[in-house]
Structure formats: structure tokens, C-alpha cells
Image (cartoon, rainbow, N blue to C red; front, side, top):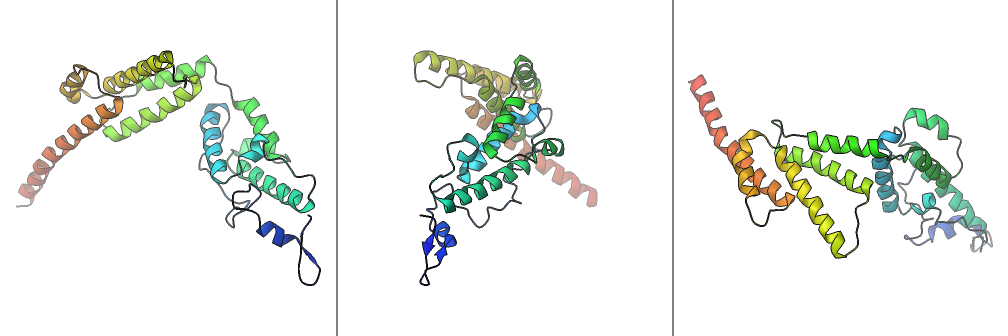
Length: 249
């Protein structure tokens, strides 16, 4: 079918498009414009491709358009209207990609026609995770410390880098005992990294956590240290207030 027919016998292509199921990747929401920026991160090249690609993947999945960059959403060949709609969706996805890359990369890709081709080219060009990239990230993880900041901010930075590292090295996800043992070891390393970066004022609670049997998870350790931080802040706040009152008296 190339379109629907109204009462006058005129084929109405817009009617056919409007009747597309909401789960159909060819369906476009009113907000799906070419000016939309679906992620806040700008691709700059090899140094942030991995994070950018994962962010873009999630955003395209939410928009139900990820198939346009994987090739799973194929252009219809037996329906002119749907083929035209596919072209429109492909162009919109392509502009979403272009809207999320740096100006230098934009010039290279602006003349591209297919979103899937651009996606494949960028992966081939910038998906370069070698030993030096992993080393630098692991060095940052081990070098991160609380250094007077909030425990929540410190943990958030660590957790972000942990997730990036785990994705790079592709930890085993099977349910075998070897995989479980490896993941347990990975969680132990994260606990040690979290505790090592704490300031000296947390030495007593760090010693307490390390002597527990079994050792707590890093999430539990973060929760306990956060409560300790809140307790310290609540004790110091009245002292500050009393000093201010004394000053104005």
C-alpha cells in the first residue's frame, strides 16, 4: 500500500504515517526534530568515544531509533510511503549524531547520507581501547582521593570510572563459579580502592570495616562512611553557629 484513500478518492500519505504503531521505529514523535540534542556529551574523538557511544545508544533506544545505526531497521522496498518515512527518520537520526559531535568531526561527517554508515565509521575510527587507555583509567582510579570533598562526590567519581573500566575490559557475565569468583574479587578491589582514598579522619571507621567478617560491599561501606560524615557535620555545625552568635553579641 502506498497510501490511504480519503472520501474524494485522493491518496493521503499523511494518514498512513499517522497510523503507524507507537512502537514502530518509523513512527516520529512531535518532539523528534532535527534540531534536537539527545545527549549533552560531545564526541571529541578517541578519548571519549566509549562514553559517548554508550550514551548515544541509550538515547536512541529511548527514541526507538537504535535500529537505524545498527542496520536492523531496513528501508522498506515494497512501500513508497514507508520508504520515504524511513529516509526521513534516517536523516533525523543522522542529525542527532551530528548535533552531538565536536565541530572538527562535524566537518568530516556533514555530507554523510546514512546513519548506519556514520555509526560504523566512527566505531572503526575512534573505538581504540588499548592497554594505554586502560592503564590511564586504572591509574586515575587508584589515584583518586577524598581530599576534603564530600563522600558522595568521591564515591560518584569512583563509581563512574569503575563502570567505564568494567565495560572496557568486558568482565565475564556468565553464571559459572569462575565468573562469580572473579566478580567477587573485582568487588573486593573496589572496596579497597574506596577505602584507600578516604582522608585520615576516617581511619578508625576504615579499620573497623576492614576487620569485619565478611567484608562489607563497597555500597555498604559508602553508606557507613556517609553516615559518619553526616554525624561529624552535625557536631561541627553548632560550634560554628555559637561562634557566630558570640561575635555579634
